[in-house]
Each structure stands twice: as C-alpha cells, then as structure tokens.
Length: 113
Length: 124
Image (cartoon, rainbow over all chains, first blue to last red; front, side, top):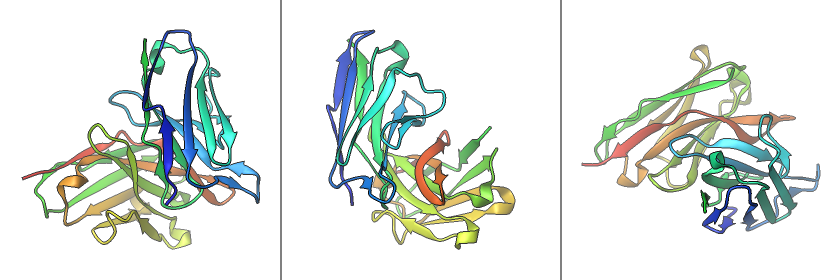
C-alpha cells in the first residue's frame, strides 16, 4: 500500500498569512504514460464531508478560490493557502489515486492564530 | 446537481450486521464507479471499498480490514449503492461516506462528490 505522510499535523496561522501543508508518498505518484501526478487534496470543515480542492496535484476544482494552490511531483507535494481566511479553518487531507487501495494522509488541522 | 444521500447508520452490537444505502442523483449513475470511505470519530479518512459500473461487471474490491465481512452492491434501477456490513467489530465504528469516482478517460481517479455520511456505532 502507498503510505501518505503529511506535515505538520496542525498549524496555526494569522488571518491573511500563508499556510503551507506538505505531503509525502511512499512511492512516486507520477505516471509516465501521461506525465500526471495522481494526487488530490481535500478540505474537511467541522461536521462536514470532505470537499475536493485540488486534483492532478495542481489543478484547482471549479469554484475553489485561487488562494488555494497545489504543487509538487513524484513523491513530494504541497498545498498552499496564500492568504488564510476564517472559512479556511478545517482539516486538509492529501490522497493518492495512483493505485488501489486508495490511501489518504493523516490530515493537517489548520487553525487561526 | 450531483447528490449522494447516505443512510442506514445505527447502533449495533459487536458481531451484528447492518446495511447502508446511498441514493444518487444528478448524473448517469449506471456509468459510475462508486466507493465507500469511512472516518472513525476524531480520526482520518480510510477507503473501504468500491464497485465498478455494471458494464464493467460490477466488480468489487475491498480494504484489508473489511475483506470477507463487507459487501458492496448496486441497483442501477434505483440509482443506489449498498454496503452490507457483517460480523461488525468495535473498530468499525465510524461515519461512512458514499463517494463517486471521477472518470478520467476511462480511468477512475479522485473522489469528486461525497455524501453527508451516516454514523455506524458498534458497541454492546
């Protein structure tokens, strides 16, 4: 199974400041056949189901604010919130869809400082 | 508008059984691969299993912790996917989410839509 490891487990950021979450996979998520990374990011607000933010490591889902961006390739990925807003308080998960079983990172809790 | 409505969660004793349902609307259900993902209280996300479309044989695959105990099925006439859970254990306590795979050129990829979830509590 591919193990997904996020860091940090939690972080507190001031409103308007940048938040950065890292995700590392135990094997490469880059498929040579199409040169795409099979990595997604989800946001889970308290009491809600996860919501898709980013797929193919860096493609923003429709309707997601452009302050959210994804980067990285291979085994190292990053989710960046460029200017934290109050509504961004949530747990964020990375997810590999390169192979089955699908696996997720353990989650990173983002709070307001 | 795509909607997934999970239901069937309940309190059940260890060793018992339960069937969850997920009714889908707003998309072509019969072409979709569907999955269940669970989340234990205060914990992260865990993939449970999936079912392919009927045209691809409605084949199933499961995570190791539930293999042999859980069964996913679908009824395309009702736009519904089911999760039959048998021999339940306390560690199966979780909110169970129905999810849809996004189809990218015939390959099932990320989960683009999620149900609201239904809570299963296994306790004596």
